[in-house]
Length: 59
Image (cartoon, rainbow, N blue to C red; front, side):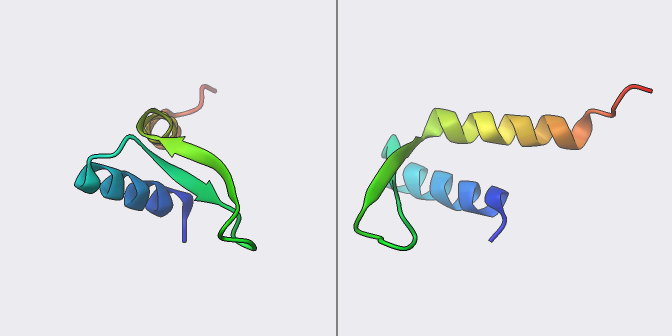
């Protein structure tokens, strides 16, 4: 699944359940939490992707 689809799914889940962050688990060991993903991080990543998609390189 593309990264932007994963981010969209995570943000949708967070908004639907009114939570601020989700645990990130190891795909090989799904009971092992390796970090957390917050709304601010998702929006920052989305803004970066939007910038990359819309800003034309100079030259």
